[in-house]
Length: 377
Image 1 (cartoon, helix red, strand yellow):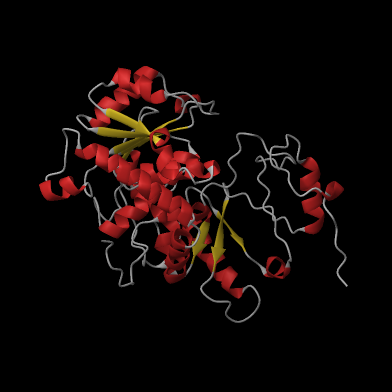
Image 2: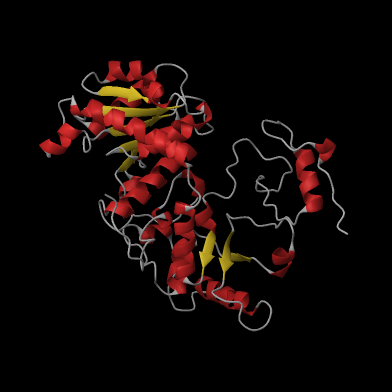
């Protein structure tokens, strides 16, 4: 029979441990650990296995090699060349591959040894393969930044699966809906309203804007803003907005800080609606914050922040459902810093390193193509 190997000292909870080198050593013994570096390669999946082991993978390798060797006379693809010009989601494989390369030149394959392995472990370690991951290491970036499907239908299916299947549970969604309702009721009583008087009176269409206020330590110093930077971002992006929802990791009352910066805006945060979600486990508060912020009319977030990234990805999904802005995947989101990145989400951009720094329309743009999807009420 199969001999089991217990983890060190039978320990199964390693959360918060500063030294997890023993866990990595254990996983190296019981799991297949592919040496995939997603800054260098893209996980590629052929449309079929075809005849002979590895033949389909070889064909995809030829596809990549043709791009790298400039076989068709075109230069190596540069992410900048796709700005505002996305490739069609059902374009030929070579065109879609060119866009997702992000200056990478290699493919990694889910080969036969991986298919037969009982456990596969992708280690989140530094570029040199250090046993213990560095605290600032973000791993391979977003899942979609390192996967390529030869068949565009497979690609769109997996993206819909991630959107519709790997999502926050109903308790989180319902709690967020209560908070959103409360914010919209506040918006009704403030000067700025929507043009539809009847809907405003019901409180169903009253809008608000949202801000992710990162206050704790961050490995990227520009991600933590000074009060003056925050005030400038609020004034520049939101103008005469009546209600601003602030999603923050601060333990203090940052809404007071913002009130002093911009007295014309009503500032609210999750703490203002705790009574409405009193039965919800506090461990869900961060996720509720994200869902609520994602429903803001406009949003200002933090570059290099996975929290902001989640909000922007949700916002991207929303735009595809209600056909907002345009079908290039642009969303009404901004960054307060760094300079030059403020309006990045307002225009279509292809993947570029570092992949984890922001979200990309590749995750949500036109992923319902080919489906008869009704618009939400």
